[in-house]
Length: 80
Image (cartoon, rainbow, N blue to C red):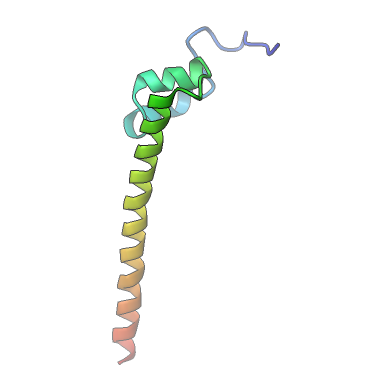
């Protein structure tokens, strides 16, 4: 069995990232289920995390796509 004496009860190795995870990806209840109880198969939390991650991915993809299209347009205008 793993030695858990390094972390007090209610603590996790993911504590430094807790603020970012709770703010953008999951509610605190899901954080507790995933990283304190190690219950990665909690269906409502998995649905919520996947949904938020896909949403953020779509937004980032569209922003990166628009900037690359803008750069292509600028380079084509300069060559004329």
